[in-house]
Image: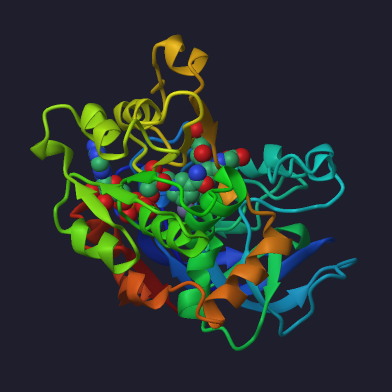
Length: 368
Ligand code: NAD
Ligand code: AHE
Ligand code: ZN
């Protein structure tokens, strides 16, 4: 079939909206009509050529929601008409990682996914006879896409696609980092670095679990109002203080119980670790750093009890946890709608990247 898609032909070039060819689902695969997709900073990072796994040409996008239109042979967990969220972190429930119960990082299809291919080693997308790579196993910047069954979470039908799509990455990543990775307890003092589409979800997760101090740190002053809107209690612009770590340690009475990096900046990651309380403070790295970047700190920081931990997709087991997060939204436990600052048609998707780079959006969503 033909489908409209925004194709990344080359790094650092705007996406082009073209009609691409899409092959139907093979065994264990599902054809999904994408109804809405968010634009996450990770899409921008890959488009900007900063991802060591970036492939071109490809169809980016990993934060979608849609409807199952066809299932391949052997598919049992979803059916035509089901509403689904594509999962860049699938959940096969059979691999060593899934069975360990220690991680959400299913390894069943990670190798082919990283190469922009379906599990059988081929691509379903092509343009003028040339293969186009899938992205993070999702490629939600296409009106129709094919995914493995294990990479689809079935969600309730009354959830609007325009908001449910955000659960496909940003909401789950932020709220999940609090609930699943850090397991923040009520009364904790926390610091969140970077108040964008991820950081604000960390903040609302912290509020939900009953954190005490929720300090937000951002170089963009306009983010203060956004942070307060979702539960932030204090704001710091690092540009206004001489030593941000010392400032935060003093503010939190000796250091934070938990800190979260939602910037992808390795200098900030170090600050986030060092702003933790001696003896027990934990820093969660959520931000994705540019290819080649490394983190550093004095080992003494770890010897004296601070913990450096990472979180991918908020530690969520996609098929099990994302339908529950959609329920939290539908039950009013978390908010999504106010964070969706811009809604655009696919033809204007490049504006979403401009808005993000200008710090003018929290989340832009393309509605097909
Ligand atoms: P965003 O662009 O919406 O927000 C980033 C925020 O960080 C902005 O408000 C910006 O002003 C702020 N910022 C930038 N530099 C800063 C600095 N030096 N100090 C303080 N604040 C700073 O991006 P997003 O969509 O929220 O994504 C944030 C990061 O999380 C990205 O690196 C993204 O790739 C990553 N991410 C990771 C996962 C995961 O599973 N680990 C999932 C989604 C996104
Ligand atoms: N491909 C990059 C790493 C990118 C990365 O860390 N991705 C996060 C999700 S970001 C979503 O917005 C993730 O889940 N990583 C786990 C995984 O298996 O990819 C690189 O450095 O090569
Ligand atoms: Zn993302």
